[in-house]
Length: 319
Image (cartoon, rainbow, N blue to C red; front, side, top):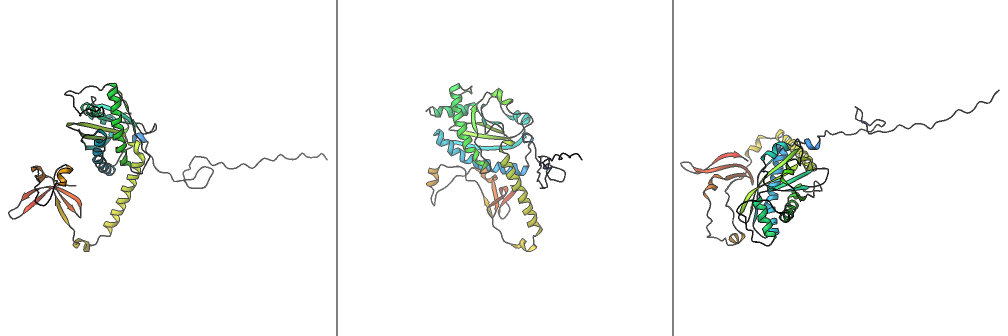
């Protein structure tokens, strides 16, 4: 009987785990469940009103600290005020920006695109004059900056950005760096459909006052947005939990309310000179800017008036 040749043996085929996730939430070739979160493409990112309000508060705080920071850098009085912070598509945001501003483009990294800081040319020229050792003289008419002036304005922009980035906290590594850029280039710097933040600023350097704009893609600070969204969701759940446990007994708990009026700005020298008996003149408009607080938290804005028997506060809007 002829000898049978041995049958060939093949190694057992191992199941290969692939990146593909099946409908039941497991990877193809495996059994472990994979958590899948919804994701919006970065350049089409939308921002909720709750997140936008938190970012406004953060920027108001940051700009308040940026004034003294730039004052030390330029050795002159500098003030910043946030006029508004909005989120929109770049095609709409760019229509609100004066193309005759002086622009400094900045990038945090290649992946998140570019933003820019736009300044009234008179502000930029005043800052450059101070950097060159001048007294901060402001030209009577705005003009384009020279190459040397433009390069010096980048130093001012980077000092601003170095302080501005603090609003991100510890949420992300954020190191924006500025470079000088032509105004015409800015119009096509960001894709028209990209979601951006547009911060409108009022800036004063010595006696020179003017507008400024800060524009950056929403996805440039994606980790910050994500964290704020999570916090907002958590706060909503806590608020719902508290409201569901409310008891009528709480209605009788005494709370403290106060009425505050702004005293205006004064120098440190004037403030240190105050003592019992000092008189502080108040502008007439403070009577229209009173705020009612509850346990220290501002709730309403109103104006002072009179009833037949009392000084009264007429509430105008909720804060």
